[in-house]
Amino acid sequence: MTGQVFTATGKRKTSIARIRMIPGKGNILINKKSLDDYFGGLEQRKTTVKQPLNLIDFNNTFDILVNVKGGGPTGQSEAIRHGISKTLILMNPDLREILKKESLLTRDSRKVERQKYGQKGARARFQFSKR
Image (cartoon, rainbow, N blue to C red; front, side, top):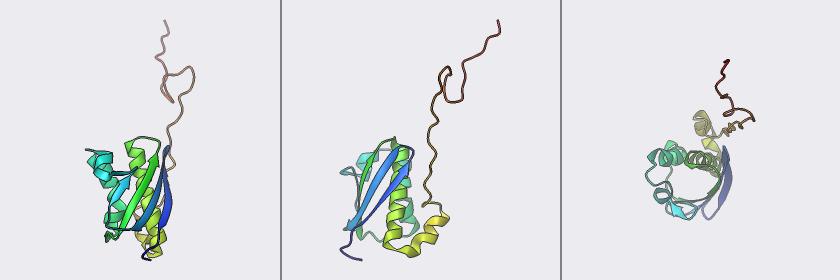
C-alpha cells in the first residue's frame, strides 16, 4: 500500500473534483492551495471536506491533492468529500460499510432547475393582475 497512488473523481451540482492520494504527511491541497487558504473563513466547507477522514480516523500517512473546478464553495466541498470517500474505498474496501452508512458514497445528482421563458424563475411566475 505504501508508495501507491490512489485516484478518484467526485461530483456535485456542476463541480468536478479529481482526487489523488499519495504517501505523505496528511496535507490537503486544493488547486495548489492549502485547505485553509482555499476555503478561507468558511468553516462548514472545511468540515464537509474532512468528514470522511474524521469518520474513519484517518492516520495522516497520505497527502490529498485535489483539482476542483466548476460551481461554488458548497458544490466544490461536497464534490471533494465524494471524491475522498471513493478514494478511501480504493485504498481499503473494508471501509465501504462505514462510509455507505453515512451516505458519503452516493452521488448527489440534484442540479439547479433551468429558468423558463416568460417566467420569473424555474417555478416562480410574474404577478398576475386581472385588472
